Length: 483
Ligand code: NAP
Image 1 (cartoon, rainbow, N blue to C red):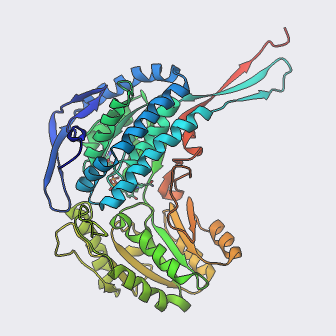
Image 2 (cartoon, protein in one colour):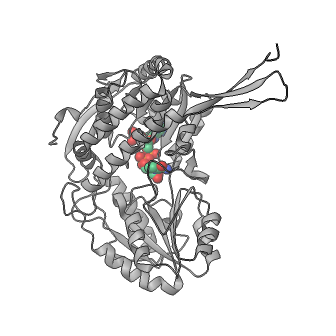
Image 3 (spheres, rainbow, N blue to C red):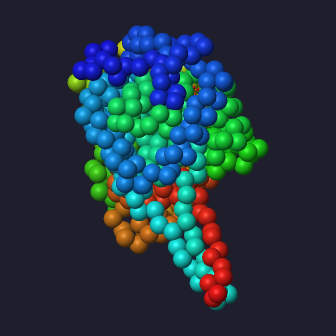
């Protein structure tokens, strides 16, 4: 891996400000060509306990420092991330597969959470309230929750860490991060930059290794007061159960099954481009990727023709090559899982009007695929596809579109294309999702509350609301004021 700064490539875990080897190693490979990139530390349960203990000590001191001082260190971290954007993007493309332009975008997006929360944490206010008794006043103060554990996925190897570490550190918490095993190098490079920014030892720890073992230690520890998780719904449910015994505060950013509804009054060209961008971003591996395209029957054929032409203009390839528009999926297993879902649809009568299989370029490359003649009992309607496959369904009325959109246990992102303002409000309010994009699919940033309802999770990340998940509200009754 050729970087401007080779020292960003770390293979040891980061505990209490030290780089430490584990009890074993994990292999990190490039999905574009199978190349072994690194062997990284796999830490023990005991080392995870050490990270928690270091976080506890560091947190007490950190919480006492003025928000401005914490913000200054976070600002320095933000600057270093942006200065090293190109190297961080190369690391990400090599371990995750997404094209370099997307990796650069994710680094800027990741950094924005550090900047945002450094600014926002200076505006954490309390309240004073009149009580029923004249000699008393109620005071509410906000305090950091304490030691936070974060478990993050491979599809956004950097941003899903900073969206948690940013608010946690800004308000005075310490954090122990367990990144996904496919993409630990991005996490470790972020830790190196936090170290260079002057973040005191113990506040940010990155433990790599067996998710089951590390996850058990993090969830069982009474010192860990909050778990923030981004990943699949089944693992989220498991972690929720594991957190029950110590009654932790939890944030869960889980899977999605986003509908994108195109009504017949929509700007068709914009709807086609929006649907394709949302569906195929990161080769279909984002939790807010459009999963189901629902198109009104009167414009269905026109939409499908334009959508197919757009998708056929894509070029899949190694994310480091400048003419690649889309990279591989993360692992060969992921490609096989996507293919199984497509084959189930084809066997049940769907038509792959473009794509439809694993590409000749390699076992991790899945062809951008468009499916028509799809029905709501197929897996591509019911499950999160997490790959570059677009099933296009037909509806006839607004009520039918709403019912189809809501016919899922998920509720993360959703999109509607229409120029009727009444319909915008009716549908936005009727669909059960945490986020609705109206005539727009690029809906995320540091300033918006990101999160879902139903089995897509709980809590919000980013925005002024994102601070709430990392603070406790304490009430102090001030008595004896008449004396
Ligand atoms: P995943 O399999 O749930 O893994 C996510 C993280 O959980 C990884 O760090 C993984 O570690 C860890 N993990 C797995 N099993 C565990 C266990 N038994 N105990 C503790 N930790 C465990 O999800 P993924 O495939 O990486 O990510 C894709 C999913 O994330 C999709 O469902 C996507 O929709 C969702 N996602 C949601 C959001 C959101 O904001 N709502 C954002 C991005 C992604 P190992 O890798 O070491 O196994």
